[in-house]
Length: 153
Length: 138
Image (cartoon, rainbow over all chains, first blue to last red; front, top):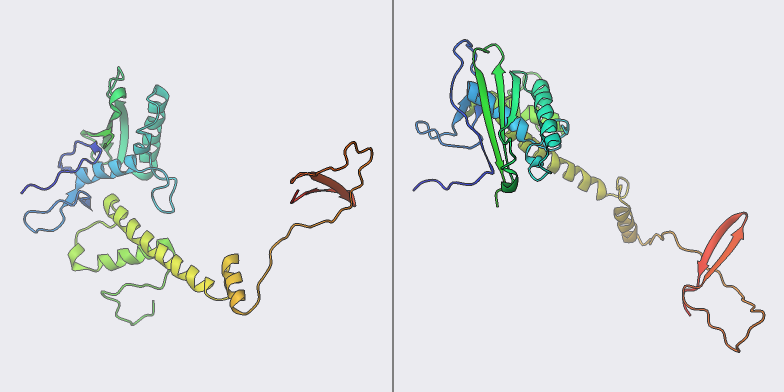
């Protein structure tokens, strides 16, 4: 029987593309808690996928959610029901760049894009955010992180 | 931690601060064979450790607060102190409003009876400070 699919309210594009030039492999626990088919243990995310998850966690974290560190977090999830306006997008963009510079030194954000030039997502209560960044020490390829925020119910 | 004690597989539980609890959890998990190869500074692992450490910190704070409030010497909350005092046969009082009994003289009355309604305001000045009084009944 297939596992129950829960609507998490966001999706992101992630691929397992390990860096060829770096001999250090980042490893993290997979917060989706999927099963490793071989070991039956919780699967791990590694390298670029790990970095993308870290950026995603930072971007979706609301300020004040991390215990005793209210300064950490972009608060993109908290912006879901804000007014859909260019100033808000500019604010989110600057916060993403600031927070990644401070708290995710492995990446260098090169661009934050909201793929909604005509505000067509406004009535769907949806926000599509694409973050482009280079991984430091392996900047031969630009990585992309798509975060698609929508209401759950 | 005292030197010479075998701490393998044991977790230090004496610290109560959030960061210390988190560091202890990290040290403990690093020593477990089930978590070999994990990076304990990584984002996802940090979220889990934050949750565990916060829960422990919360319970420690609750236990500390409860222990303090259970004794008259260390209780901080007024409710707890009065409750302990009550058990010793002493009922503390709180701030009370002053009561004044006044004799009212009405000049140039046009009716034989005059009623002052509830809430009728009086004011007086004592040593330059103005005090307001109201009728509590009709």
